[in-house]
Image (cartoon, rainbow over all chains, first blue to last red; front, top):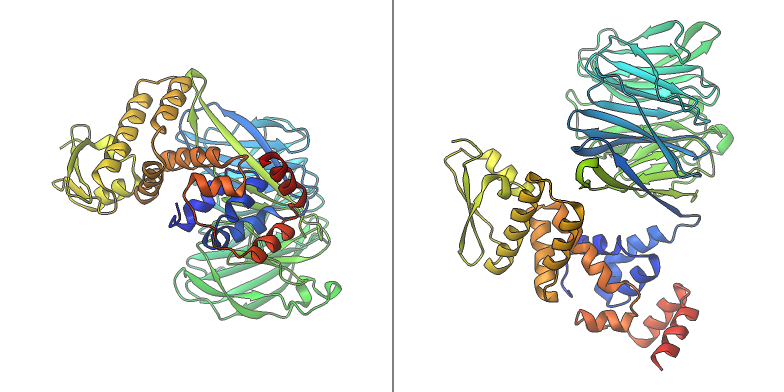
Length: 359
Length: 164
């Protein structure tokens, strides 16, 4: 075991409680070096592991998709992809209860999920025609909206839980829907875009919408800010930055917050950007910017999260989601879970949700 | 040739050949990817990192699980079989783990890691070293510092008391 590959050692340690993992790391200098990051990860203050057994009705669980959390960290929603479609689980991490939503049959594969600040609303998108389903107040049946903009790329719920914002994979526009099923408002920009590349879309704490879009044609990143004022969506500003290569890149220069700025100046409008390199292969669902409840703007940088305070390291295992709680941000990771056959009842899947109160 | 009747020849590090049904062989993501990239006439896949003894065990695992899925074997039966399958000496167990990692067989890798973790659980540092024949290479000072850093004072004294 002395020459065991690092990754296997870590995988073994992942099945151990902290004390045993520490003992394993004490065995030799090599083990200690290999397991140090994992132990640091386990050493996070406020860590709470919530293991829940979820029984999935279908038999062919392919993978876990993205997940999202409410601002108070109580509600997690996760997409479970199965052979014949996907299911969204709503997990209450306090009561440890969960429910599944009845997805529209046309929504073959769900690709985006979002939980509102309070956890009351869960929105899911899926399908090639851009279906969105909104579930409210634990109701298992949601209202379905056809957005006809093609496959949804990004989905967000406003802090007041009245609006949904959507960006599409192949259409350079943002669609604003009202959560209660009322009128939709279509906000177009970047009309000349051939292949839009969405880098980010989110509501600020004040309810303004921020979006970043790159296009193959323009080779530019367009940053748009919009405000929902009454029934109107007002476009406030558009900035373009020439920093995107012509095709979807593996790496690109992202505009990062100036980390020297004090918190009160760190709202997105006052951000002075500097270039950094970021990998697009990171499967985390944290968008390139994400506004927490306290107004902090977060960006994801490779495997680290940065925000308008000092940069903090994040640790991803599988899919994760960042809540909007603010300085005490709660981040969840959803460990990869392997489906196991349980007779005629379907697949039993152990979902381990870990909550970190480490910021 | 249909995939159903297709036979894949896996060649171990020590040049032993194993004829395996396509469905069984492709439980390894690595092999599935290799077979996707080559023509249907290609039937031989060299496995240069795995010796015959370990490869035989890995194939045994894949064959059982392929069949278990096909006949809808009960979870209890599968668990029992897994438990028996993992009753091997430590060296073989570690080699199976490394092979599972190389061949990218997620279930086997997970099972192996859980088995090793189960052997480690509730053991002291010394007991783990002994179990896996690991030479401790920390100086006494380094070890003391690490214990302190990890705040194990109480735990260690409990262990020492137990040992005495």
